[in-house]
Image (tube, rainbow, N blue to C red; front, top):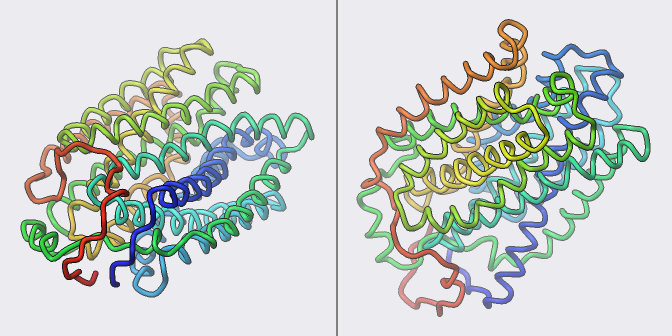
Length: 423
């Protein structure tokens, strides 16, 4: 892949904002289903474990698509992969509303994850390639879009459900909005979406300290920590509205308000992305995992008021979506050479979401055996005992992680006329 001419600063920003808008819809499709789950379970008479599985089964599609999806970049452009992904999950969101039972609903939810994975890998790879010197901050901007979608989905979805007295209406609306986003994405310039990560031959020489393979010490330990994070995060996301409804007896607006604060927390990805390009990403990741465990425990064991649940939901969103996801994604790409960054994206998506696929089911089983509080404690203990320890073995000296000041000024840099290495 030859390096393409860079866009003007204005057009690059517009392109990034359009990509962010499509990812906002991705988040809406993910987050709205747990809010609708109590109504879905009541209509179909699903047990808590079945409902928990439906809430997180989409991550099975995400995880299974991760690694093969990374190799898809060898056959298709990033833009084409992103558009394909948006179309798949939007159609499946609509089909979910037509389900006749558990198994076809589970299938639609799982396949929607395939589409989400394709879009996710494409946009995070293109952002990392275009803003190569400030990769974490660029990815953080994408995650802010996710946070906006995660904030909108519970409130808008709940409002639509109440207004039309149907849990199906939000799925129809969100699915159609997604298809509109796919059309918009088709018009984004390939000069933005297909940019290579390396700029000059000197950049290639500077990668000699990084292992020339996808599987290496750093990617393995990152994978272990990421598995733990995915399990804990989606156990919370999948059954949090059900917990608020059944255990704390929150009203639908109160439940939606508390759940939406997770999305507000994700907006903190911008300052933490800025920070991650300046400090040790390893210790920032450890800090976030400890914070996730503490807030997860408090949500299910301590907080009982709407205000405290909103605050803790915000902290959870900040720690997981604002730090762990963006910082971990960036670290995984920086743990390999630029020519296989797309495959590194696939690996991250695979391990983060595969563990999440059955997290709702696992949490429901733990709740049945030990209660909400002790079930959450078990999951958070696993995250601390395995995930944090794995991060301690990361060797940052063998990555391209940097401590330089972070900004998006590389948008304004003139084209470098040195010979470009093909990637």
